[in-house]
Length: 99
Figure 1 (cartoon, rainbow, N blue to C red):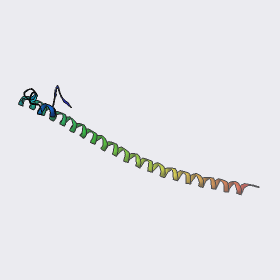
Figure 2: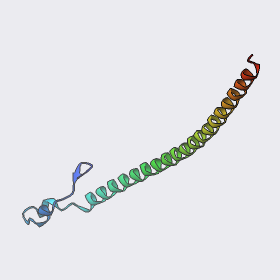
Figure 3: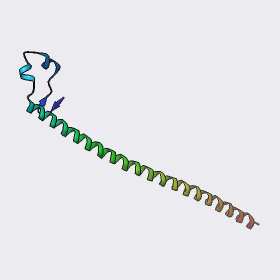
Figure 4: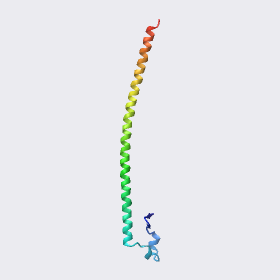
């Protein structure tokens, strides 16, 4: 995993005595790595906050759409019933008027 232009030392780097002087980062380099990690954490937290806000908005929209569908189903049932009633009345009038 890379952190900016630097990489963290591997286990082999830390245990190999010939490489020890070269691979142990200085305190300044450690501070840079820590700061980089803090920045990345802050960015991740900001993305998470935006994702949660988006999720809340989508949940609100979903509930609104569910209510809309429910109202449309009620209207559909009402209109079907009225249409059947009108058909029955029309048929009754037609039967009464036939010779």
